[in-house]
Image 1 (spheres, rainbow, N blue to C red):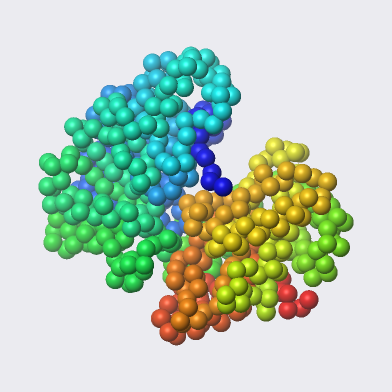
Image 2 (tube, rainbow, N blue to C red):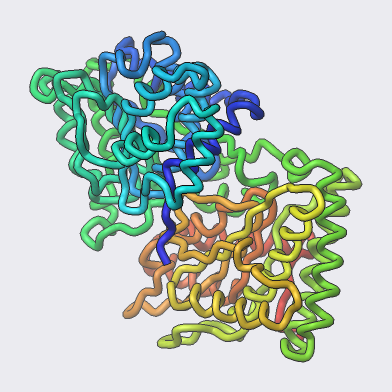
Length: 558
């Protein structure tokens, strides 16, 4: 079922957040990247091209949110009087709504749109377009009423309705100043004004190749006169460039990815003296704020040559009170699950759940005690010989293990929210839709045997491809088809970036379920044939770190 994103809900959340949250604090590398983007928007940069390589959680999206909002604040004009266009383009509906919502929060906080001024509200919102196949103006009339109340009834429900519908339509080019859009949409901007294009997830889709001639012409200063385009900024991560078409899967083809393409042209411009300071326009963000410390180690060594470093511990992200409550809710959830489902799950799965709770509890107690040797917030459940066989669509053990743990964590999240209104998120992600569907159906089956109902609302079940750009507090990464057969490559060996995505979506705790040792053996064989080390290094680091801290649960012992 496709997710639908409501512009109205984004504006409501942005209004509320602007009143309670403090402003964004940037890391050193993120501040440098944002300053470079802002210099392009202000047309004070030496180069109209910028390429930013942003590994998981390093603030790729934040760089755009901060740059756009601060640039418009410094311009000190209303949106309707802004003399240029800003076009934010990405490949994912989720990112469109996320960036739109976060920028709206900054607009309200900085007064770029004054919520106490009716004209500022109407003119500001009328200057913005939010376009995507899953982007809707609102989902219910109740949302419109709620927004009208949030705005102090300064704008009538009828006016809001007309304005929000217009924000999702491709019309009124002359009024439009800022567009948030997926790459699939035709864009309503007036080329009479100078336009800045900001591309997010520029490593992901070959559709972005429409921008490659723009990059070339910008350096030659021709496109400014022809198309009135003043700058092109691209952010992405080639180590997570999944969903590529076959023609782009070769090493040579990967050079055609927009991020690499722009980097190449900036480098050429530096070589020929067109740009003097190349490092200012090709940047890599290195500090991840998403992934807690130590759980970033496997992908840092496997995909980023050890350069990616986590800035926060689990205890930095969750206070002592929240950890205490999570521990209490975990005990309650396990007791409820074990009592109600042990006969149905069988002895092996029941023991896995018991060991899992013990490991999770050890992690919580470790951080509550602030011990010198902190445990990584990372648990691996190795299904061993119970692996995906060639030709099989699902593997039963990992389906029931993943669904059982999801059920357990959903109860924890529900419990924490009930007591303290802390809203944690949970995602189950797997590489194949049939595997995701099997886990979801098993989850519903298990849920039906508990007195607690409606637990699925606390969980998102998703393929890895659909979850790119997303994050959750708790992530269950389910591996699939880890075998390596030269004549029939599984998805991990067609797209080695996939594992990086699976292991980098969590903000608090990552749980990995699959035949990890078998996967490592396959990765070793793949490296011999293809000279590809990323998957092998990542898996070896993953096994080493959970072995060291006794956070690996192996079905071989059951």
